[in-house]
Image 1 (cartoon, helix red, strand yellow):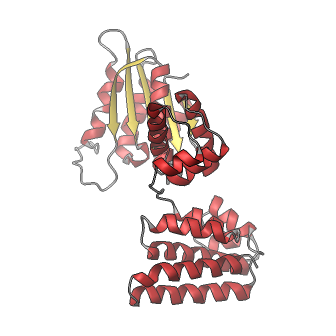
Image 2 (cartoon, one colour):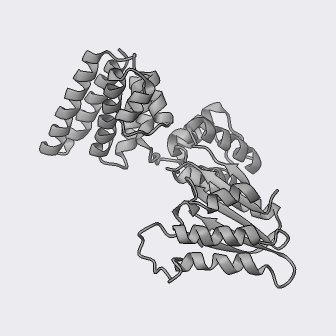
Image 3 (cartoon, helix red, strand yellow):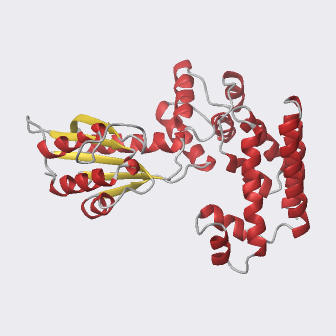
Length: 327
C-alpha cells in the first residue's frame, strides 16, 4: 500500500458511509505501521475559524509540520485528515506542496473526503498515492456488512435476522455494529424475533428510500418508509422531496432527450437524474398533474390544519402517489 492514501466517499455521505470511511482510513494507517497518529478535522467552510495571513486555518496548520518532520525515533508518523473536501484553496495548495515532498519512509497520511478534494491537492494525491473508494451504502450493502461483522463477532444470524436489523437501523453501520456487540455480549443470535424484541428504535432514513418505494408503486413498503421518516423528521421535509421529484419527472416527460432534461434541471447529471429519466414513461401526464395537485393540497393542509391530521394526510398522499407513479 502507498504511504499516501485517499479514502473517497460520496458527496452527501451519511452516518453509515462516514463510519465506513473512517474505519477504512484507520485500517490503512494500521497496515502502513503508523505510530503517533495525529488526527486533523478540517473545519467546514465559513465556520468562523481564524485564518492566518497565509490563508490556513488553525486546525489545518498542524498537518503541515507533521508531514514535514517525520518521527524522532525512526518510526512512521501517522496523519489522518478528515473532511478534506472542505479545505480552502490556500490550504490545498500548501498541503499539495508538502505531500509531494513527504518522505514515504517516515510519514503515512490518509485523507478522508466526502466529495472532491480541492485542487491542486486532489490532483497531487492521484499522482503520488492511491485511492480507496467508499460507495453510497444502500440496504443491500448494509446487509452484507452485517453478515461479515456478525461472523467476526461470533453472532449467528440468517437472512431474516439481517433484514430485521437493517429495517431497525437502516444503513447506519455504527448503530448496526453496536447492536451486534450487544447480541455478542448477551450470547444471543441475531434472529428476526430477537431483533424485534431487543431493539425498538427506528432508523433515521433519507427521503430517497421513500421515493424509491413510491416509484415502484409498492404501497406497503412506501407506508413503512413513511412511518420511519416521520419518527425523526417533519412531513413538510418529505413533501418538499416529493415536490422536487415531481418537478423532475415533469421536466423529463417534456424533454426530447437526456441532455435537454439535465439542462432544464440546472445542468447536473448524476445517478438520481438518470433514474428519473429511465422512468419517464411509467407515469401518464394526466397522473403527474393529479400528483402535483395532490401535493399542493397536502401542503396547504399541513400548513393550516392541526398536527394530528398531518400523518393521515401523508398516508393518503402516499397511497395515491404509488398508484399514479405506476401508470
